Image: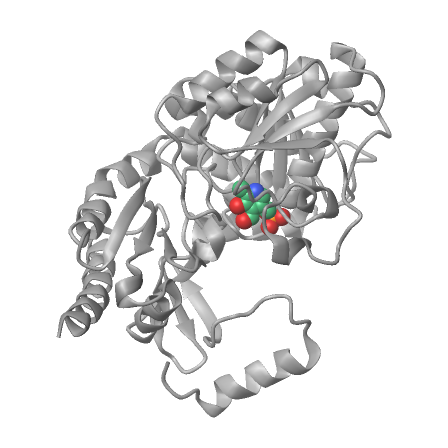
Length: 411
Ligand code: PLP
């Protein structure tokens, strides 16, 4: 990467001196953002293909959502759930309609939503299914990413993320992602739920075989086991439907969402579930000071309304070929595999042309903000409000970098 300016270096030094080193940020210091673009402290613009790990699906600093958040902040900000506040009911109605589930419980982050889903499933297991106390099992997938809390880390495959954080929480059984026979074989009398991402995002945008969700639904229904879909990354329009489970015409028992539920302006997460499951919660059994506050519900309602029009999902579907035809044209010439849906792609780089991190560094140099998820895998998450011209620019730059490296290797 090119030499850092003194301004960028000063910012990085300050962070390195006083911040904790739990991320390894790339050396870009961002100062502004609008739509699909961000600008660094030196005025260099980048087309953003990370979008805060899909938290900013509607683009950066979207005026419509900013106006709604500001108006709500001026009117009523945080009250706690010790009282009713206007906005919660309307939001709850909108998101239950959008998802088809009966009830919503609000938290703040994706990890918290998943912790809540785990608690709901366990309590349902004991109170409704009749599993003996403390024996509940939840089936999870290899390659999963559900957040960073200690319970969630208990069933992660990421040894670096687990190292030194034990003892972990028992009660999880891991099976390969995409393998329904393995789920069926792992279910026993104490199994209360199957927890999965409909598409594994952090895993590199891994799309399971077609019909997978439908089959998991059939298996879980037959075995009286809950199906939990973590839609923290796949939800809120990222995949061409408001939630990914809708693409296979099923209804899980529990769905978690976060990230773009607030258009990325504010940490807002939600757990959606059937009456049978959500009614296991009674006053005092779960909660969060900020969960479901009036600013969160105002933003959540606005995002649900926007998705209910279908306009952005149609836009993403229409532009899907522009992105995917462009990426697939590189197969066999520096790119090994292209996966994904809508405007969300996982691209595996041929080790012969270098690592994904090397490709990422070159793209950033050329004004594309992007990040690898695995050593050879790059995730592309353009906002669903991106234009055709912006996607064409992305494909041009991506192609230029891959072709340059491919030709250099051939020479
Ligand atoms: N679940 C999935 C599928 C995610 O992709 C993420 C974050 O990337 C999370 C959960 C965790 O969300 P948060 O970082 O808001 O806790």
